[in-house]
Image (cartoon, rainbow, N blue to C red):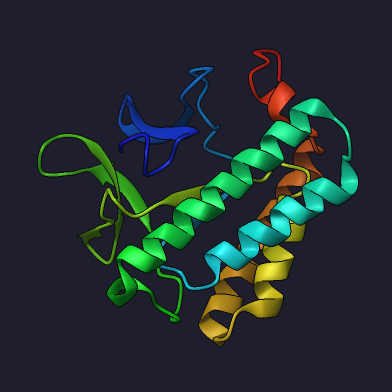
Length: 183
């Protein structure tokens, strides 16, 4: 997976598993932590990212590290909008397909859905269960999604995030804790 597709995380193989890894810290997301991936081809993605940036702004006004995180989210939203403009034929309002991570035909880790590799030029945005604002962003996705299949997919993710938090507590993940090896 190239850095323009997902600038913060990469897919790496660890033993027989493929895991999401933070590019700057080198830490992988634990197998037991759920994630929710927005794809550039999802017509709702840029709207959800704008809402997420708004949530960050409303709750952390003036905090420099969180301001940087909000700016990164807004930059990603612009990447998603640029994808819309460049690839209107790939924009879809349809059920969010299940995805899996595995090695592609060249031996590189990649994201797939229905046996089709997600194009490397399609931007992605990853929400982690430990991100304290991810549930709000996913709940917003549920409100604006036009199809029941999208709502069902996001509702399952939201329930997994809430269960993770019930069991593990919420590690108030922010840009400053994401690179802390103790968290």
